[in-house]
Image (cartoon, rainbow, N blue to C red; front, side, top):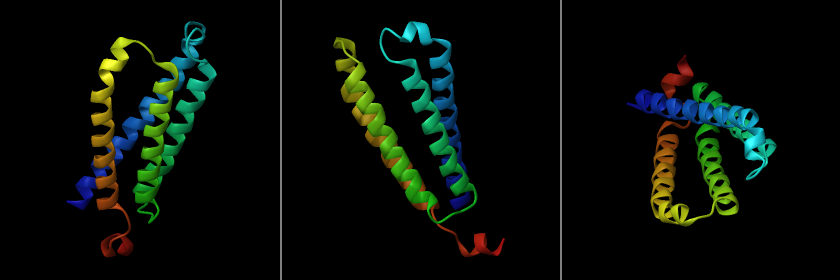
Length: 131
């Protein structure tokens, strides 16, 4: 069961890495269009930063490091904080306001799922140490 949870968490981390790399790539591809709303260098660098951060977490999880669970929780909560600060700073309009309650629920649920998975898979078991 623990192996399945670790696999699920690893898959989630790889999705976060891919999403942030795509964000960085798209920001560089659409730099001229984005200049009217957000600086593309900011979007690209933040995407690369989070991709690197989640890659470090994935490495820690794959190598069963004790710090991996805590690092994943902290990284994901900081990532959510970053997304919300971007939303508050750059997004406006009635449609954005209407979506906010749903996004709050989604952020809270995803944070709970990530924290639960990271807690369940953190640390080394006796079987992991024997390998």
